[in-house]
Image 1: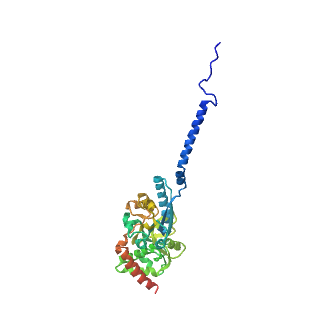
Image 2: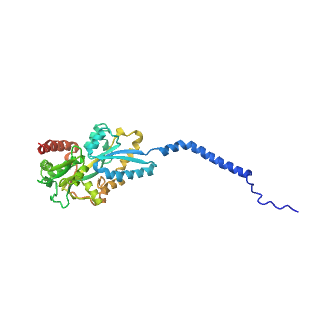
Length: 356
């Protein structure tokens, strides 16, 4: 009688040589993975524990929302997509003269966007960057622009239509302080230039009439705006950007008067060479370049600044029309305007007449 056939003869019994070989294979794989992890652990640990890289940015007062809520997040996203790195920003915003003084005192800023070129020159003179280094940047360092306008109470009860109306008796004006605010210096040039366009020699007379009516001054354009909101004065001389941004959010509690002739302010970027270590320079330079990108310029327009690229300004229909816009070049540039108008006419003549 034949023996019954063996069933599943090709299988190994549990615990047989085949099972032992499988265990050995798994053990060998785990051992290799462990050795690889052990070899790579220092690198992986350094990457995981590396803190975010930081850019310290100082800007004049009205830049805060545009930079914190628009520009910084946009660059952070682009840099993360490009490099995988996380970037953090530390931003500080105050009157242009105030941040200039802080930089000269040694705050560790990587770059600054100041309200006007004289503040850039002061910073360069203090050794924080090379003289006129900003002229090597796009648009000679000018990042964005905004004209000077007049804010008045709803209904315009004083019937203010132009800078000349600010010199009428009984009009009370809130104004940024020229000692600390770059916007105040732009405003002085706007007022003087408007007077000169009314008649030759009218700049000094209009400045005198306006400054006789100044009832409150503040350290920055933003601080002057706060004073006006708190009930001081009948009119505020300020940047268009403030009004356009508030109007876009339904928060403009005042009316905007566009003077027939007014100045278009330009704002200058500085990379503070002395504060930027060589290993951080590519990051800082990349952010500086980003400020002139189409994306960044569109963000500035959305936040009420006028772009240096006219193509994008049509994107904000809230920008008002100005019949006779002019720039600081109408006075021969900032060096001449500062000496002849701000210092000689406003400081040495007008202020002495107002406060003898």
